[in-house]
Length: 158
Image (cartoon, rainbow, N blue to C red; front, side, top):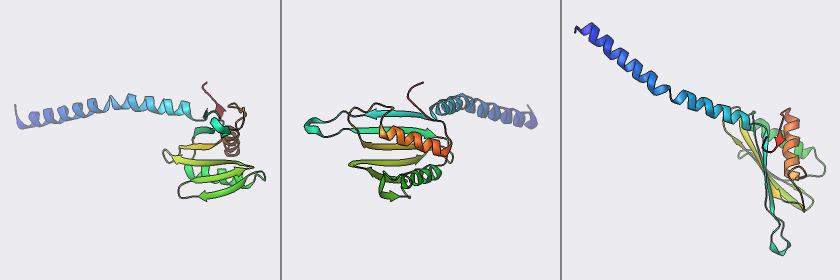
Protein backbone atom coordinates (compact mmCIF):
# COMPACT_ATOMS: atom_id res chain seq x y z
CA UNK A 1 0.00 0.00 0.00
CA UNK A 2 1.42 3.38 -0.91
CA UNK A 3 1.49 6.28 1.56
CA UNK A 4 -1.40 8.14 -0.17
CA UNK A 5 -3.71 5.14 0.14
CA UNK A 6 -2.63 4.56 3.75
CA UNK A 7 -3.29 8.22 4.60
CA UNK A 8 -6.75 8.07 2.96
CA UNK A 9 -7.52 4.87 4.85
CA UNK A 10 -6.55 6.47 8.20
CA UNK A 11 -8.61 9.60 7.46
CA UNK A 12 -11.67 7.53 6.50
CA UNK A 13 -11.30 5.37 9.63
CA UNK A 14 -11.12 8.45 11.85
CA UNK A 15 -14.07 10.04 10.04
CA UNK A 16 -16.24 6.89 10.35
CA UNK A 17 -15.26 6.53 14.02
CA UNK A 18 -16.21 10.13 14.70
CA UNK A 19 -19.57 9.80 12.95
CA UNK A 20 -20.38 6.56 14.79
CA UNK A 21 -19.49 8.06 18.17
CA UNK A 22 -21.79 11.04 17.55
CA UNK A 23 -24.82 9.10 16.27
CA UNK A 24 -26.00 7.64 19.60
CA UNK A 25 -25.87 11.09 21.24
CA UNK A 26 -28.04 12.75 18.59
CA UNK A 27 -31.20 10.66 19.21
CA UNK A 28 -30.73 10.84 23.01
CA UNK A 29 -30.47 14.62 22.87
CA UNK A 30 -33.50 14.82 20.59
CA UNK A 31 -35.51 12.74 23.08
CA UNK A 32 -34.45 15.03 25.94
CA UNK A 33 -35.51 18.11 23.97
CA UNK A 34 -38.86 16.50 23.14
CA UNK A 35 -39.48 15.64 26.81
CA UNK A 36 -38.51 19.14 27.92
CA UNK A 37 -40.89 20.68 25.36
CA UNK A 38 -43.75 18.57 26.76
CA UNK A 39 -43.01 19.81 30.31
CA UNK A 40 -43.07 23.51 29.38
CA UNK A 41 -46.16 25.18 30.77
CA UNK A 42 -47.27 22.23 32.87
CA UNK A 43 -47.75 23.30 36.48
CA UNK A 44 -46.88 20.67 39.05
CA UNK A 45 -48.48 21.09 42.45
CA UNK A 46 -47.73 19.40 45.74
CA UNK A 47 -49.25 20.12 49.14
CA UNK A 48 -48.38 18.91 52.59
CA UNK A 49 -51.31 18.30 54.91
CA UNK A 50 -51.78 20.38 58.04
CA UNK A 51 -49.48 19.32 60.86
CA UNK A 52 -50.37 18.18 64.36
CA UNK A 53 -51.02 21.02 66.75
CA UNK A 54 -52.85 23.06 64.12
CA UNK A 55 -49.75 24.14 62.18
CA UNK A 56 -50.44 24.62 58.49
CA UNK A 57 -48.68 22.48 55.93
CA UNK A 58 -46.83 23.70 52.88
CA UNK A 59 -47.99 24.25 49.32
CA UNK A 60 -45.62 24.03 46.32
CA UNK A 61 -46.09 24.83 42.63
CA UNK A 62 -43.53 24.73 39.84
CA UNK A 63 -43.55 25.29 36.08
CA UNK A 64 -40.95 25.33 33.31
CA UNK A 65 -41.26 28.36 31.04
CA UNK A 66 -39.72 29.10 27.69
CA UNK A 67 -38.39 32.49 28.80
CA UNK A 68 -35.18 33.89 30.27
CA UNK A 69 -35.00 33.66 34.07
CA UNK A 70 -34.47 37.42 34.48
CA UNK A 71 -37.66 38.13 32.52
CA UNK A 72 -39.68 35.63 34.59
CA UNK A 73 -38.34 37.16 37.83
CA UNK A 74 -39.05 40.73 36.67
CA UNK A 75 -42.61 39.74 35.78
CA UNK A 76 -43.09 38.09 39.17
CA UNK A 77 -41.82 41.19 41.00
CA UNK A 78 -44.01 43.49 38.90
CA UNK A 79 -47.04 41.26 39.50
CA UNK A 80 -46.45 41.17 43.27
CA UNK A 81 -45.96 44.93 43.50
CA UNK A 82 -49.13 45.50 41.47
CA UNK A 83 -51.27 43.39 43.80
CA UNK A 84 -52.57 45.48 46.72
CA UNK A 85 -53.36 42.34 48.75
CA UNK A 86 -49.70 41.25 48.67
CA UNK A 87 -46.80 42.73 50.61
CA UNK A 88 -43.23 42.21 49.35
CA UNK A 89 -41.19 40.99 52.34
CA UNK A 90 -37.82 40.58 50.62
CA UNK A 91 -36.38 40.70 47.13
CA UNK A 92 -33.03 39.29 45.94
CA UNK A 93 -32.57 39.87 42.19
CA UNK A 94 -29.14 38.19 42.22
CA UNK A 95 -30.63 34.92 43.45
CA UNK A 96 -33.95 35.61 41.68
CA UNK A 97 -35.76 35.10 44.99
CA UNK A 98 -38.83 36.98 46.17
CA UNK A 99 -40.71 36.59 49.44
CA UNK A 100 -44.26 37.90 49.73
CA UNK A 101 -46.99 37.87 52.36
CA UNK A 102 -50.73 37.90 51.98
CA UNK A 103 -52.39 38.32 55.36
CA UNK A 104 -50.70 35.84 57.69
CA UNK A 105 -49.51 33.59 54.83
CA UNK A 106 -45.95 33.77 53.54
CA UNK A 107 -44.66 32.51 50.17
CA UNK A 108 -41.22 32.33 48.59
CA UNK A 109 -40.70 32.48 44.83
CA UNK A 110 -37.52 31.35 43.06
CA UNK A 111 -36.62 31.42 39.38
CA UNK A 112 -33.94 28.99 38.20
CA UNK A 113 -32.36 29.30 34.74
CA UNK A 114 -32.04 26.05 32.77
CA UNK A 115 -30.61 27.73 29.68
CA UNK A 116 -30.64 31.21 28.15
CA UNK A 117 -34.30 30.81 27.10
CA UNK A 118 -35.73 28.24 29.52
CA UNK A 119 -36.29 28.67 33.24
CA UNK A 120 -38.21 27.17 36.12
CA UNK A 121 -40.51 29.11 38.41
CA UNK A 122 -41.01 27.64 41.90
CA UNK A 123 -43.32 28.98 44.59
CA UNK A 124 -43.59 27.56 48.10
CA UNK A 125 -45.95 28.83 50.76
CA UNK A 126 -48.22 27.91 53.64
CA UNK A 127 -51.18 25.83 52.55
CA UNK A 128 -54.69 27.08 53.14
CA UNK A 129 -57.34 24.93 54.76
CA UNK A 130 -58.86 22.55 52.21
CA UNK A 131 -57.19 24.08 49.13
CA UNK A 132 -56.97 21.74 46.16
CA UNK A 133 -54.62 22.21 43.19
CA UNK A 134 -56.88 24.68 41.38
CA UNK A 135 -57.75 26.69 44.51
CA UNK A 136 -54.17 26.83 45.78
CA UNK A 137 -52.86 30.38 46.09
CA UNK A 138 -49.38 29.35 44.88
CA UNK A 139 -50.90 27.70 41.78
CA UNK A 140 -53.00 30.81 41.18
CA UNK A 141 -49.84 32.94 41.47
CA UNK A 142 -48.05 30.76 38.89
CA UNK A 143 -51.04 30.97 36.55
CA UNK A 144 -51.13 34.76 36.94
CA UNK A 145 -47.41 35.12 36.15
CA UNK A 146 -47.84 32.84 33.10
CA UNK A 147 -50.73 35.01 31.90
CA UNK A 148 -48.75 38.23 32.41
CA UNK A 149 -45.94 36.75 30.30
CA UNK A 150 -48.32 35.59 27.57
CA UNK A 151 -47.50 31.93 28.25
CA UNK A 152 -50.03 29.11 28.28
CA UNK A 153 -49.78 27.14 31.52
CA UNK A 154 -52.06 24.50 32.96
CA UNK A 155 -52.21 22.41 36.10
CA UNK A 156 -51.35 18.77 36.12
CA UNK A 157 -50.59 15.75 34.13
CA UNK A 158 -52.18 15.88 30.70
